[in-house]
Length: 263
Ligand code: BTN
Image 1 (spheres, rainbow, N blue to C red):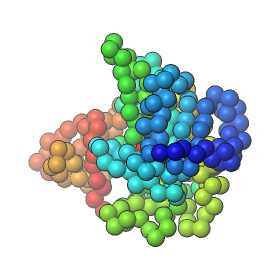
Image 2 (image 1 turned 135 degrees about the vertical axis):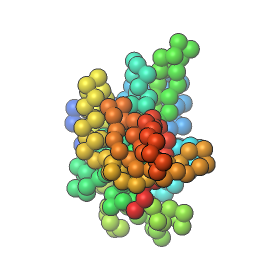
Image 3 (image 1 turned 30 degrees about the vertical axis):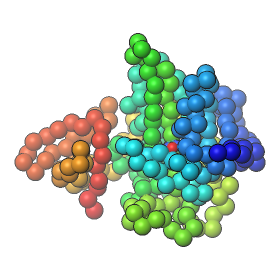
């Protein structure tokens, strides 16, 4: 596939970044297969930390658990390369969720919620998904982590496909200026990611994450290996493990996985 740089959107983002523009290596494409895949190739060739690839459309967007991520030309698809010193992959996903929530709120004024572990919701509909992918050295230290974020900025023309129609939402109303909201949100997202990453040692992102977490004291469905169990979500700890209680009274701390909120 041929990749065309969108110089106008790229310049608009850089102009909004202020001092952060110097640290970032940003490329914005009209369309790519997957920003995560493209960035992985750059990482393998030695690209530095804070290399960012963004696109207005993906033809093979990747979601969690091997799923596809629907990526029409009405969203923001962005991946940032990080080279942390420690094994921080699990931490970087909630960090990205907190940063994305802050960025979306800042550029839209909309109240964003976080559904454990890393989906963003607006009015109970998913507006953003996050996929972090890592490569480790033989010594077990991280070589790099790619944090990929997809945000539904505007409802796609003709609406979401049937399988997403009940669960997906968009940040801005139909008719919004895509390039303007893309540049605003991308700049906000890059700045928020860099800020939260710089404060990673003190886990600055935890407050932003907890404030927006919307699953506590709610009935949820825990999905695991094709099975589903009902449970009550009770608490999250500082590692953002979720404590759930099943109807038989047993309790379990869950480090990762998928839950659905029962409305
Ligand atoms: C999910 O909700 O399952 C995670 C979706 C992650 C999508 C983003 S879009 C930018 C980056 N490139 C990809 O191919 N995936 C991530």
